[in-house]
Image (cartoon, rainbow, N blue to C red):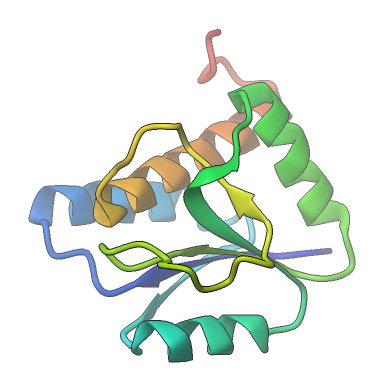
Length: 140
């Protein structure tokens, strides 16, 4: 069964966003989700990510967008695979021109601060698992 790893560049400094992220991490505790914080310079961070086993997606405004229901199907497929899935959030400045060959996922065509993007992605992961379970959390 594949695990999902969220990689964040730098610790969340905003205390409100950090509290929200920790809340969603706690809710996802039994779902096989792990969060990793990296402090390396961008090229080294990306190199580390590319050396990990499994598939890698960069979170980027230019990536593919999903509805929450479609994303839940994607998440379910990731958990059924034999390998892990890694999703990486870049630094505040974005990915620059690095990693152009890697697939990208977008939360929106809008730009968000990377700390806020981390919280939004964790919420969407939680929502995906609730959709998969059939709970009333996702009301749309």
